[in-house]
Length: 450
Picture (tube, rainbow, N blue to C red):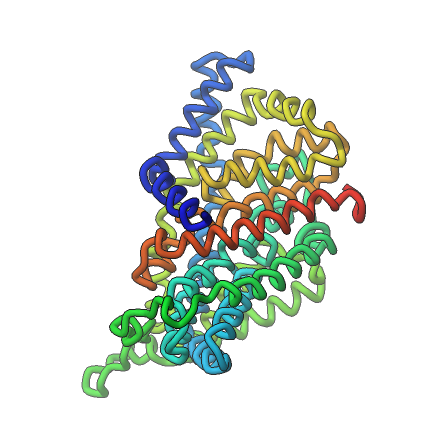
């Protein structure tokens, strides 16, 4: 039954869900029509609103690009690859390999989702080399758990980090919300822990019998990952090349960055963590661990190939924000939520609304710009705290990720599989994940103040 449902879902998404940029344009037209129907703005004024908002997310877009790039840079460092290779030798059984894959994927995603994209793909290769009988499709599906179930609760969570960053696009409406009230809120941490434990237990239980196991292609296992540029021969070495292959530049930059971080955290404490600081930390670590400019710049160039979607999509989502915010549509849509929710049920409703929309708009950061104006307005109307609304959005933004092919593209590209190959396992993960998250938000008002 689950396999049939998984196949049907995959066929539907493959046939009907277009590229993310096309979705952004369709949503822009939908916002435009809603503005015409439900606000006093004219057709011409809505075009003005769209253009006025078009570049509002430039800073946020750059921050998202850096999360992806710095995660890739760190994941391709020699020390990180050696660490993953060593971990891959620890499991003593196929089920143990699946459990370890779940822990690594979700753990990396909690630290940095860009790191998880690359790190999980690299770890899959290391595991199949050392665990010969492990089911490859289940292993890849489990590697997707980080992006599918955990990233928006952790240290690179788009919405919580954005609202903690000075001068964010909603600062005048909701102020600055420190991560101590979102990412490090006890409810968020407990829910993340519950997901980590349960899915790590569930994964090994799905491993098929030996005769039904799908084994990885041996040719794939032979492939190598990132390789630093070879050092030129002494006869070809110029002063410029000598500098590029020397650690001096990287050491100077890293030392300066570490000194700044010590000063910053000494002054602000852990509550001072925001998007800019997270990106700075990972950039400095990546520079240090790549050791030479040549290696660092090669990793940055490769990481840059993953950010083009953010560059072309974010201005259009900012345009949608402009329509919703400047036309008065945010207040209208906020009233819709106020009408159907109570103070106690609002986080649950926001979580599921965000999750359903996420299947169509698989972009946590850009989608926040679309939803934030009206869900935060409704939260204010109902007396629900801003931090709890952000947490509800963040978990909702992940609830359908594990059955959404968009974020799996880099992983599947490395694994040489199609999404339909892993969808059956992903669907089972989704059902269990959905139950955990739904129960958490239904019980939320009983344990914590909303």
